[in-house]
Length: 288
Image (tube, rainbow, N blue to C red; front, side, top):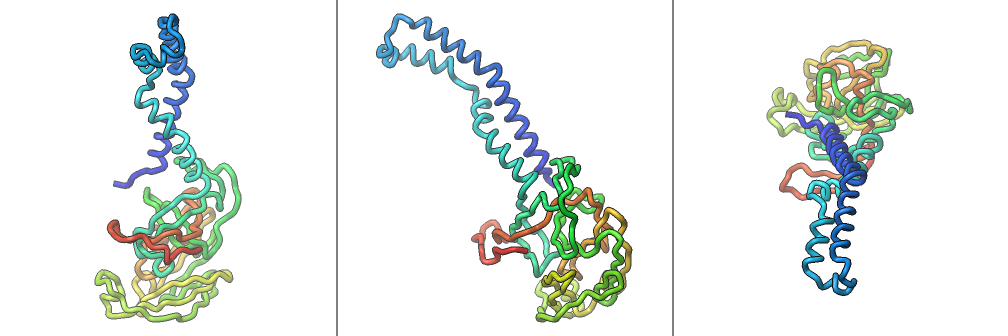
């Protein structure tokens, strides 16, 4: 079952915030009144005597004691609120769970996603309240696919109005073939991967979209999605593909991504940690 982290974080902020507010408005005053009553009961004692009188000290401790849920809420509310604001409007961390963006992103990469590049959106509701920039071809973007509640990360290939065509693993945008250059060949090692099953190899290439270069890979023998595909991107939608072209569930499978389901732009790898018992690595740190 997928965990709705934004909703859980919002509920924690709201819950601790309400408790903190009620304590400040109502409960703190009652504690002050109780402390004043104790002090009045022991008014015959001097300040030095009060410091040594165990009954007085116990009564003051009882009168001023905060319930554990109030103490916890007051301690965690500022931190939770800060995390909620940063995560909702500025930067959100993600971990790469699959190989669909190899070789650009590997399983276990921790990335930072800029939440305001494409506009300010309300958390949870994801309603845009302020336009800033539109996605550009070549951007690596986090989004929710149609009819999905999970985050996906792919590369923006087609903008609204673009005609995207794939023919024998060759990518065409508006009738123009996207230039690419061979980098290397890689033999697949995972028996579940398409190239392995046909005895082929991965062709690692440098692709250039709108002047921006990135590394991607195709199988030497195209998969069914790479043999022949053609579509026009509707207004308000984007065509997304993984850089691991023959092993990526993307817009060729789930369709175009509506603008309102955009989460943000992936900007940097800040850590790699592929297994729980492994040691985190920072060798892949860098911009995406």
